[in-house]
Image 1 (cartoon, rainbow over the protein chains, first blue to last red):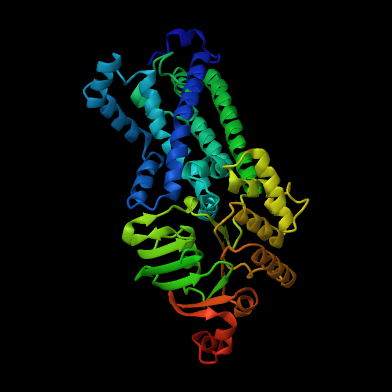
Image 2 (tube, rainbow over the protein chains, first blue to last red; image 1 turned 120 degrees about the horizontal axis):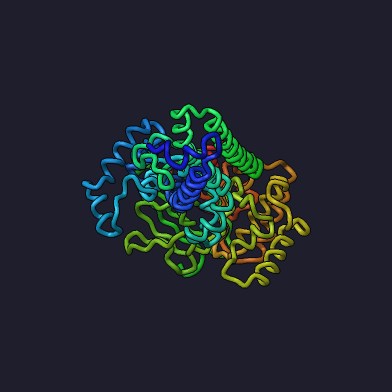
Length: 234
Length: 236
């Protein structure tokens, strides 16, 4: 969008502003998703409610839909003419789309399966028998969650959080559709790389791509290490 | 009856149940029958881990379940010690902590002392710091037994305690159960598909077929009666 502004002067250099924005977006996405993943992951692992398969499928949709499709629906759904957009403007002023807050909401929705599915698998791995054993020890469902299930499932929960963080750093289509590429507001590192390539600054794009790859590699390695620890423990 | 355990369970499906069982204080009852006869379902119903459509379970005069009066105490509110077939020890907690987990309503210092006592009672002194994965199957079963006793239960329930253990472990478990039986009037109910174990460890036997308690009474008398359902089933 604006590759001739401040970023132009930083040609062939790192776009620190975009990196900072990406890390902030990733951290806030994870902070919001973590409690959601705990609640939804455990619920999906333990419920026998009818409709569970449909809910699980709906939560998985962001994995299979093209980012432009999700981005389009979010753009329309959060746009200034939409009920959500209008409520937002009434309550907080300003528009939801093309803002950091809008991108954050989109990021949370897109990353739901990355955070929830590993947590769900981890809670399923705890098994009903241990939950039954906790009940016969006098534990309430809440106490069983904190004392038995979470200590056993946390590597899976952290794995999901790490994956969501790494995926947020690399998210392109949805962020572009919902946020545009406004420097300092919605231009993340992935978008900045695209802008540099468009401006024939391959050296700058290469530098930032390498940073993104290293961060993602470290994050995924951490999640694999945790997964290994979990298997060893179990 | 005021004391002991009285169980009535009825339902047509998905698991058929037609069960009437009474266990007097100090008595040990073996639930025997073929695989799929509903033995474990009866045990889980007593503990509150399974809810039958119709039923009444009274333990020491307190109704744990009475579907007619809409009474259904949750598992955590029933003082039933349960030893699971695969022990179900909490893998992230030491043997001592596993036992302590069943008495969280007591102060920590009291829990530690009581858990150590119970581990000693099941002959596991000195193994309290071990994680379950580092214990043998027989030792894990003893930890599970100590944990089941930790709530001062009104009834002790054991699911297939003699299966999947080697001969010395089985002998030691018989001896341990005999010690527990001698020291408390608490009724004990265990599930077994092996009638020899039932004959050795139980005063009473209940023979289940397709979810129905077809025969109940003194173990020896039923086994010695060639015309009993159990004896005929064994002869098949």
